[in-house]
Image 1 (cartoon, rainbow, N blue to C red):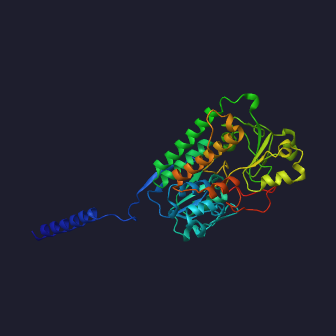
Image 2 (image 1 turned 135 degrees about the vertical axis):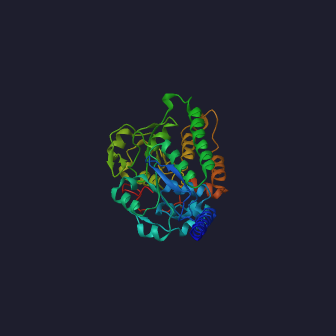
Image 3 (image 1 turned 180 degrees about the horizontal axis):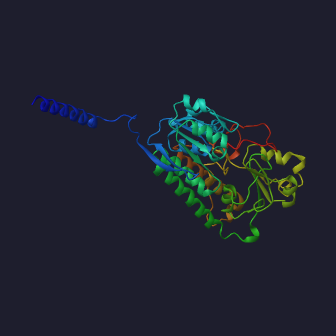
Length: 370
C-alpha cells in the first residue's frame, strides 16, 4: 500500500513540475522567434523577428534602413554611408555610428563586441571566400544585398524591409520606382529617333562607365538615350568596367554626365579631354548627390536619377514637363519624412559639399564604390 502511495505521490510531483514548466513563458535560450528570408544570393536565412542591433555593411541597405525610420537599429556601418551628409541630417546619430569595414574587409571582433543580431552585406563580400568565411564564423545571421540590375535593387529594398518589419514601406518605395520607370518611358516614347542624344556616363573616376546589363545601363535606357559604352569592349578591373580615353574620343558623345563631385570640372579643365565635342560645348554635367550619388549602383535615389536625366535631355520636348525640384521635395518628404528646403535642394543639384569624398583625385584613380 505504501509503495502505491509513494508511486502515486512521485507521479503527481512529476506531473506538477511538467505542467508548471509548460505554463511558464520560455526564454530566448529555449526558443528564438524569427523569420526566414531569401536573400540576393538565393540563401534562405533564419533571421530574428525584431533585430535590435543590425550591422549594415552595404550602402543601399543603410539608405533603406534610415528611409524606413529604423536608424536606431543600425549599430555599425561602412565609411561611405557615414560620409553622406544628407543622411546625417536626416538621422544625426549616423555621424557617430561605428565603421566596421575597411578596404573591403569587415572587423569581426568589433561586430561581436557590438552584440550584432543581424548583418547586411554587399554581394562582393559574399563572393570573397575570406570575407564570407569570416562572417560565417561569427554565427550571426547575415543577408546578401545586390544591385547589379533594377530587379535586384528592388529585391534588396524588399529584403531590408522584411528583415526590419517594414514590408509595406518597402513596397511603397518599389511601387514608386516602377511607376517612375513607366511614367518616364511614356514621356520619352515620342522623341524622334534622330533626336536621341549620345551619352557617356562617368561613374566615380572619369573613365569608369556602364557595361551592358548593369543597373546603370538599365536606368539610363529608360530615357532612350544612346549610352555609348553599352555593348562596347571595356576594360574589367576588380568588378568595375573602364573605357580608355582613346575609346571615349572615338565615341565622341553629345554629352557627359558625372556622378562623382568634381569629375565634371576635371573633364572640362583637363587638356586630355579637350578634343571631345561635349567638352567644347560645355555639355558635361554634374549629377545630383543626395543621400547617395544619383543613379549610382547602390543608390536608393535611382528613380530621381531617371527623372533628372529625362528632364536634362529633353526639357520642354516632353509631352508633360517634369518639375524636378518638386519631384525631389516630394520624394524626401514621402520616403524620408524630411522637408528639404530650397538651400538643400540647391546643394543636392550642385552635388557640391553634400558628400565627403573618399579621395582627392576625381579623375582617373580608382575609387571605393561605397
